[in-house]
Image 1 (cartoon, chains in turn purple, blue):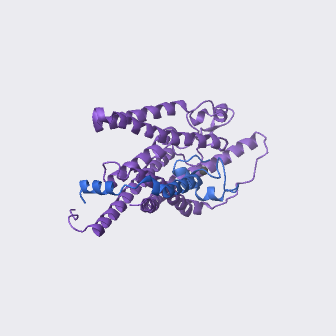
Image 2: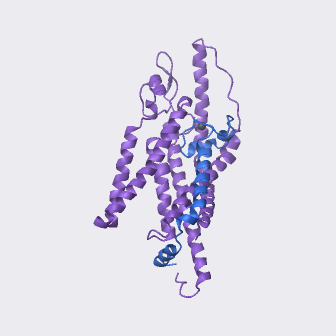
Image 3: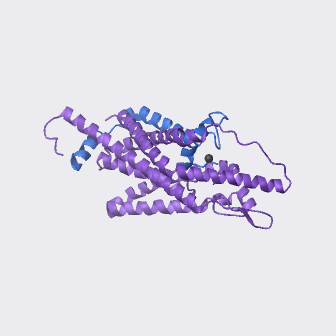
Amino acid sequence: MEARSFVLRGVVAGAVAGLVAWVFALLFAEPQVEAAIAYEEGRGEAEEALATAAGAVPAGGAEEEVVSRGVQATIGLGVGMVAIGIALGLLFAVVYTLLHGRVALRPRVLALVVAGAGFLTIYATPFVKYPASPPAVGSDETIGDRTALYLVMVIGSLLFLVAAVAVARLVRGRIGTWNAVLVGGVVYVALSAVLTTVLPGLGELTINAVENGPRVSETPLPLRDASGAILYPGFDADVLYHFRVASFAAQALLWGVLGLAFGALVERRLAKGEVGERTPETSAA
Amino acid sequence: MTTAGAVARAKATAVPASETLPWLISAVLVGLALYYVVGIDQGAVSVLGDTTVLHELVHDARHFLGFPCH
Ligand SMILES: [Zn+2]
């Protein structure tokens, strides 16, 4: 097979995975996003009232809506999910092509292994340190730092997996495949643990620490008046929990469908090719 | 298809790196560009101008996919 066939199948499988994840997101993400936006709006009003009571002139100027919520929550969500599916499908196809025929795994198994590696490095490991957050959880002032830190986690995880695989291959001859995979797993977890410990929590970023003292995250605390009485509650822990579980599940679904669909497409293509080349002795289920 | 047969077939169809390079490089570039556009652009940094149309369009996906946003 040529690289072209793998890349094109990566695009198709990625788009299908994105569509499936879109449907999932419509059902499980949007209710949490709506709840988060309602919290954000209510909090904005409470903050404004507090500022006015303190004698400040209200900042005013409601944010202009560039894309309506209705579009964001449906079409926009779909465009984003399918586009990321295609993006990941392309990157997936590159790694798959380099491994195809060079490891003793049949295509559909190799495809699942590569998809699992992608899920682990590009999403799950960064999630441990910087989990997905709904609107209202996250400060505008720290978007630069947060983006940089998130990408450090993604790139770090990818490098750690490469290192883990290299170590596993090195020791495989002596201790066998099973133990070599275990050693590789330990290497990956250990390196990731070091990185997550070294990087700052989002609540520890200077702007946040000055405002609220050092915290793990940026999740909004209750809004209090001068006497310490709560004027507006902190962010709803259940909304945050459900959003994060749904995000994790959607990503697992995305990578799972990508791997399964890609593996099936490649095996079908190989079976067809074989029938064309040498008809006898091949049709054993 | 048996597993042994499928493995053998995969081995027979391994692609030499030289002829695949243009496809692989383009796939990496397009893949990274799409990842960047959906996840990052018009946020912390922006190459697609200082409007926020694209950011706003894919906004919910950006949050849900784990990227930092507001
Ligand atoms: Zn946002």
